[in-house]
Length: 234
Ligand code: HEM
Image (cartoon, rainbow, N blue to C red):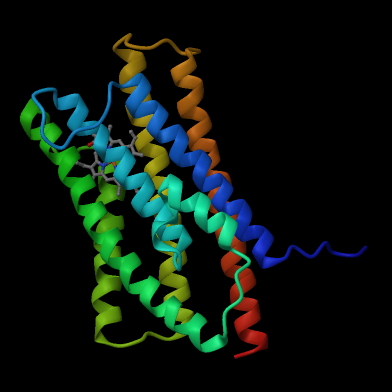
């Protein structure tokens, strides 16, 4: 039986489409259902809300996109979605890739740090213990591995296999961490009777988790396609 061939650009389009949906869901949840986001506010819940948004956009979307740093932001994502077929010479392409990659890392590092700070501040201001859950341990592991990868990259370009392995590992860990974070938050809301089990909000958040897992599958599939291409045409 013939194996269907999935072309790289189609996968990229799907990844971006899912990225738009995930961004829309996480923003709808935090802004519409949870009252909005803030980095400075007397309402500590608003500060917490910055945590899922920055983490999902930073570690799950931008990290998954790799070469196209700002595309997880809705408007730019739509622009990139339209421009994806643009023709470039190999040299221009390579240069764009290097620049995008550096910018991606820069934006990602700051976004993740602010996202982490938001959760930490929420806990400290409300007198809640820090780092007691599986989610927080996985989250710390993500941030730790990500910073090691950054340091390694500044020391010199790692081998393709090493880069590919650590990239995929950290990305998969980020998706798993974000999913446990969502589960934890919704469980808090449900056990405190803030929302009911089958409320629209619960359905929206569960859909967000599923979409992130589906997106993760497409991103890994894209990476394995790219690795195969690299092996065939080094
Ligand atoms: C890859 C993305 C994420 C990372 C790396 C991450 C990391 C962390 C870390 C390190 C903490 C501990 C803060 C502290 O103890 O003071 C934390 C707390 C928390 N995060 Fe996340 N997070 C991520 C995504 C999410 C998402 C999407 C949600 C969904 C709402 C979420 C919900 C929570 C909650 C409810 C807490 C407080 C309870 C706890 O400490 O487990 N996180 N996160």
